Length: 294
Ligand code: ZN
Image (cartoon, rainbow, N blue to C red; front, side):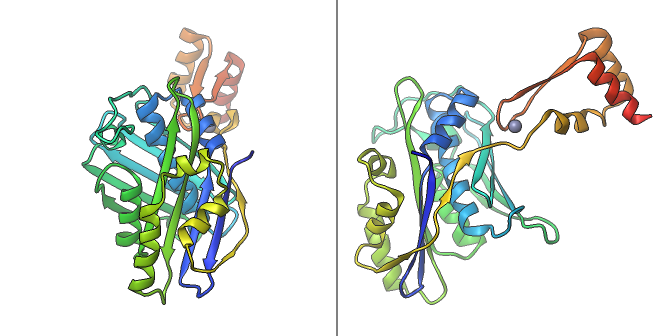
């Protein structure tokens, strides 16, 4: 089934809850970047968080959100983008990272990402300069880091769950997550009650494996609180790169450098970091880029 994000508002309008099945999206990211288990989990969780933040924080068609996580662990930087139309893309600096399982038998994402570093979220909503909020990493487990980001940078009390189940052959079995946000008017007792539900919730990957839908996950989080379901949004991995886009960037290189590519290499290759697509530029393509300067 295709991935989608469900959302709901508590009937007293004090809470918003989002839940997503991002299985196909994270599978595609894993395949495109050939990530190994620890890198798959780190990139996958970040993509799920990016999808949830984009669904909750972007409003217009061209709005875009970028997440940068830079920790001191072996995967290096993780960069992801999300759009209002339900696409995400992203990459991890070092995709080939496998680590021993942690003490609770799970992929050690905290060690892969590193416990020291920063998480930055940039929102470009087409009005004025893009806005960036940045916080230090609190655990490197990513969900806790996003919870901290929402509290510190956006002043939104929240609970975030992100979960990727990686098979022994590095492929992704399921991926998903949820985000609970308190809205103005929510009181501490209500928030505590929902947080207690969240604490008893199995991992989202377990819920998805047992066949629950995003709506059913929302219902589990809401518990007894009545909710009104809002629109669902489809989600998929997609990149807006193109040969023309990279051509525009290459056209800004000095002539001599482009001429060198023609003389010495007989062409050029470029690979999109975000999606892994490769583009080839023939001698004729490169010559066209040079004449564009003139
Ligand atoms: Zn691309």
